[in-house]
Amino acid sequence: MTIKALVLNCSLKDSSKPSNTRALIDEAVKIFNELNVETDILTMADYHIGFGITNEAVSEQDEWPAIFEKVKQADILVIGSSVWLGEQSSLATLVVERLYGGSSLTNEKGQYIYYNKVGGAVVTGNEDGAKNVSSYLIYALSHIGFTVPPNVDTYWVGEAGPGPSYIEAKGHQNDFTMQHARIMAYNLVHFANLLKSNPIPAEGNVVEG
Image (cartoon, rainbow, N blue to C red; front, top):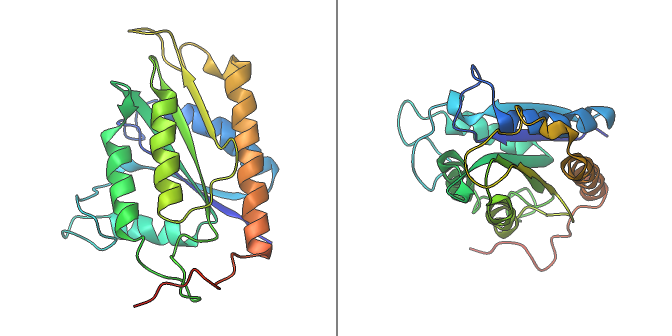
């Protein structure tokens, strides 16, 4: 039984630049690889994503529909975000809005399309706000239909104010962050397998109209 994970890196840096968020994402993906999960990582700054609460293209340049196809195929969705002024990145908000735009679609059973998928979050910064960003992302995923297992956020933040970020500060040596990266990966994969074998029954939660 193959489990597929999709990670949307919402750093404000495109993939040509070193990304602290991507560096922590890579630690979680190492564990996905150990568990034989097929993982695809997309850097949102590499794409033109239009504004709107819809899964469909809002312009000829809008590349969200292709990303959305990958979301539909995934069993696990992880959103990665940097912290700015204590909040998620603007790209993370944009991605959540576009995910929300597809949340009224239904699967073959008539349930919301994100049912039987699990979600988590990876957050980095060099100031406070990681738990705030995680709470936003995890609640958003839960609200639109993803299952959120326990302890599926991992984060690293340095000292308050300007200072070294994850890579420069060797955040991969932080025991707490690495432990939670492992817990997140294991719990996401465990629940993805559970839902693959025992999908949420349609009785009582089929969308009408």
